[in-house]
Image 1 (cartoon, rainbow, N blue to C red):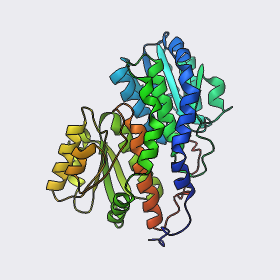
Image 2: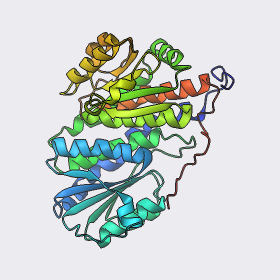
Image 3: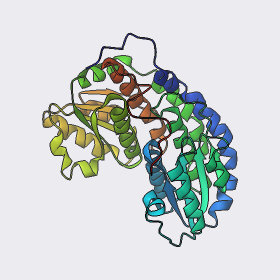
Length: 352
C-alpha cells in the first residue's frame, strides 16, 4: 500500500467535485431552452437508443429509467460492437439515438452514432466537447457546460450529463416539473457540505478491504454503477455495481465481514423500502452496510450513512453520486494513490 496522501494538498479531483453545482447550473441554463427543439425531433421517433461507454454508459442507465418511467417510451442501451465490429444493418426508423461522450471524440461512440443515422435513426449528442465530431454529426447537440476536466475520473462531466438527460426527458414529454430541476445545484452544494465525520469514518473502514458491493435500484442503479466504477478506477478496489434485485439472486453470498455493501437510494420513491430491507439483511448476516442517501430509514438500517440530496427520486441521482465521489477521492489518498491520474487510464478511451 502506498503512503498516506490524506494530508497533502487538495487533489484536482476534489476541486472538480466542488465545481459541480456551478457546472450543473450553467448546463441547465444552456439546455432548458432547447426542450422545444428536442420535442420537435422526438415527434419523428418512438423509442430511444443510448450509445455510450464507461461513466457515460452509467449516465445512460439513468436516462433509460427516467424516460421509461416518466416519458412513456422504450429506452435501451446500444451494443456499439454491433455497429463497429459486426457492421450489422438494421432498420432504426422511429428510433432516437442518443450518443453520450464526455469529449465527443471517442471514435467508437461517434462511429456508432453515424451508423445509427445511416440506419434511419434521428440523433442527439450529449457531450462536453464543443466543436467535437459528435456535435458535427448530431441532429441536435446538448452541449454540457462542465468546463475543462483535468482529473481522469469523471465527476463534473458525469453530473452535467445527468442534468442533460433530465432536460432530454422533459423534451420527450415526461410529466415532470422543470422547476424541481432548477433546485439541483443548490442541493449538490448542500450535499458537499454534509457530515465529513461520516465520510471519513466510512473511508477508514474501507481501508484494507479488497472488495465491496455497491447496490441501488431504479433511478439509483446508475449511481451504484458509477460509484463502483469510481472505486475501481481510483482506489483499485474490486467493487461490483449491482441492482439489489440482481444482488439477491446469488451475488449476495459475497457480502461478508470483509466485503462491505454500499447502498444508495433517494430519500423517497418505490425502491427505498427494498434498499432498507437489503441493508437489514446485510447487517443481520454480520457484514458492514454503509448508506448513501435514503433518509432516516436507510440510515437507521446501516452501520454508517451519509445524507443524500433532498430531491425527488427522478433527480436524486444527480446529487447521490457526490458522496460516492468524495469517498473515492478520500480513500484513494488514504491508500497513497493519486486520484487524479489512475494507472492505465486517460481522459479519452479509444476502443477498437
